[in-house]
Image (cartoon, rainbow, N blue to C red; front, side, top):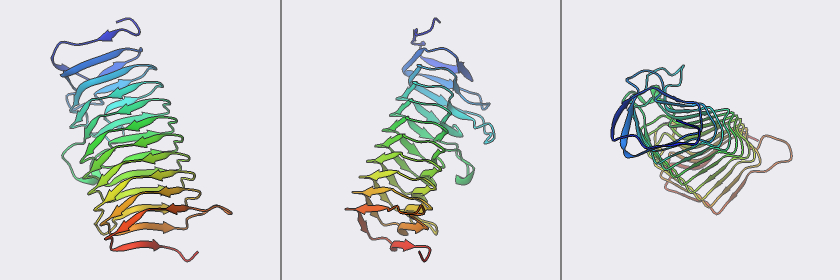
Length: 267
């Protein structure tokens, strides 16, 4: 196909893995599956400006070192939307990728122990991406590492470990997400300037259950969230950490938690 072509494969199941190295639109029209046969990632998106939509991506490999995924993104300005990703170790993995849209995908991992599953959505050194309206079931984490200026909004994640885990990730926005029946809701580690607004976090009830946790994190804005029936509603560990900064909590509902707010240190 020529660059910028629109491909609409005939209905059926196609053998992966697939590598896309030019800007194409691939539309499965909810009738096309791509099966990686248990090896590697189903789709490797190694280009800018491509669109994957209305596909069913299944049966990735099982290597955590290789990040076997439904989609590996290695480019900018791509759109991955309205896909079903099943039986894939990782869901959608973005590495050093900018200005992508990940929207309305339904993602689940392999049927293995929780700690051995991959992450539903993983951002690594990736900036200005929009992660919105996705449904995640029975994956491990959604992670944002060394990444900034991303929007994570209106996602629904259940049955995992960390609904959302930030590590060295500054100036991201988290809005109107629904995180329920995970081990931890949102955890911010060394991640300053994050805004967490209007999210519903419930039933993180295990021995490490936390609604929103903070580790050496400063200058965050936590507003209008509902933290309901968690082991710990808010967990603060040396936060804020940077001198002359504050963490701002306004208008949050903290109800029916074992502990409402836990200050882990004596600062």
